[in-house]
Structure formats: C-alpha cells, structure tokens
Amino acid sequence: MSAYRFCRSDDIALLVDALNRCWSPYFPGEPPLTPAAFKRSIRDLQVWCSSCMVAFSDSDPIGVLIGAKRPSGTLVHKIAVHPDHRRQGHGRHLLASLGSKLAILGPRRISAEIPETLDAACALFNASGFAAETLLTDYVWEGDSDVRDATPISQEKDGGFVIPITMDDLAANGLLEEAHSHVSWARSVETLTARKDDMAGLAVASDERIEAYVLYMKRDTDAEIVSLRSCIDNGGPRLKQLLSRLRAQGVGTLRFPRVHPAETSKDCLETLGFRAAGRHLVYAAMARSD
Image 1 (tube, one colour):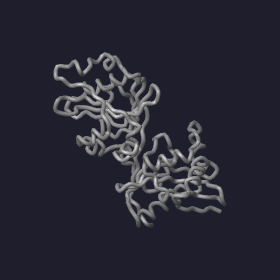
Image 2 (tube, rainbow, N blue to C red):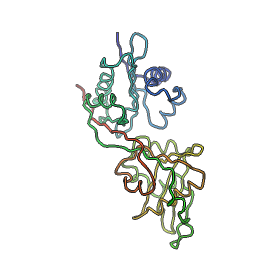
Image 3 (cartoon, one colour):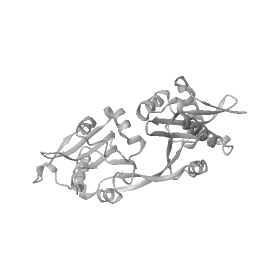
Image 4 (cartoon, rainbow, N blue to C red):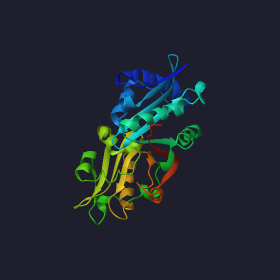
C-alpha cells in the first residue's frame, strides 16, 4: 500500500536514503548522496525539507521529490520514482501534492530544469500541467587559437588591465542583479552568495569601470563558469582576454552550464570558442489546489 508525506528538517537521513534508492538507479555514474552533500544543497540552493516529499510502499521509499524555495518560486530540484514502481502515478501525485500545498502557502510559481534527453521526466511535467518555458544550453570551451594568441589587455592602448575580483566586488559595483535576472537556479545571485568562498574571479578594468568579468570554480585542470559578462558594447576582445588568462593559469576545459538565451547570446559564445554540449527544458506552472 502506498503512502506519501512531506518531510521535516529532521528527515535528512530519510531523504538521502530515498534519493539513493530512487534517483541513483538512473544515474549510476554519480556517487551516492551523503547527508553532508544534502545539507550543502540546503545552503547553496535553498532546498527546504518542508518542500520535499517521499512516497512509500510499506516502509520502503519508492519515490522522492526535492524542492528548493525562494520568494520568487519553488524549484523541483529532483524527482524520481524507483524503477520497479514507475507508471503507477507516483510522480504525478508528488507534483500535485506540492502544488496543492504551495497554492495555499506560496510561492505559487513552480519550475523545473529538465535535461531534454530525459523523455520520461519531460512527459511527466507535460502531463502534470507544466509548460515548457525556455531552453537552457550547456556550453564547453576547450580553447582556440584566437584566444591563446590574444594580446594581453595590459598591453592595449586603452589602458585596460586584468585584475582579480570577487563576487562582493561585483555586488559593490552594482553588476550582479541585472546580470543575473535570467539565469538558472544554480547560478542565481542567491546561490552565488552561498558559494562565494568557493569561487575565483577575473575582471578587465579601465580607469573608470569594470568592462568584463568571469566568476568560476576550478577543479584540477577544468573549471566551471558561474558568471561571464561584458559590461560594454563589443566586449568580445575583453572576454577573450579573460579566457586567455584562464588558459594561462592551466585551465584546459571550461564548462558553462544552463545558459539562458537572454543571459549570453549563442553567437557570442560560439565566437569565443564555446560549443553546445546539452540542453535543459525549463518547465513552469502556477500552483493549484485542485
């Protein structure tokens, strides 16, 4: 017999167990989730245990929904049903229960970022009344000759130069909120603020202003971009200089995940040498109590 319940802050062990039982079979290459990693998602993504649900068959978890909540809305961060219990309505029941709760307590907007290759997940959200809102694209950069041969900005006639920069520096210059009005949940200002101690940054600066910047997290010879922006028209040369500096620091591959089309244009990224490596559909709906 199936049962469902929302979770509490003391249910972290249950949620970790449910994710390892129900989510991990679909992603065998991922390491098992730990309580420490789940607590990190609470800090970084604002996962709320009260927005998470577990489905049970007797005492065994057979489905799980992980919700993250901010004033702007709730993100269905993860949802999974154990392979032995699929096509029995558990996923739709989890989404409907969350919608009924949020219709009363708010915020009413519910969204999810689903890899477009996950046909079953996309079908679930379509069948549950969600609409595909936009596409987010994953990009990868492995360098090109134009970037490697770029002239250092410190040698340019206009006097611009590369400096280290932090997220706090960008916030103090009023450069974050506007740049992050259209970004994925994991690269929002809230997430960046929570993870700022894990990030490094570079900027091209003139005497008057910051002209371009990149925030990133380095892992060995790879790095993940969390923010990349030119603050001037025709800022391609500035962005190329920043990529060149990262290459000089030993970065071999840059990953720029879930880029919104209004955030940085496809043409700009392709000109810089990035290539598309995957896409996510953003599904959204307004919570209903029915």
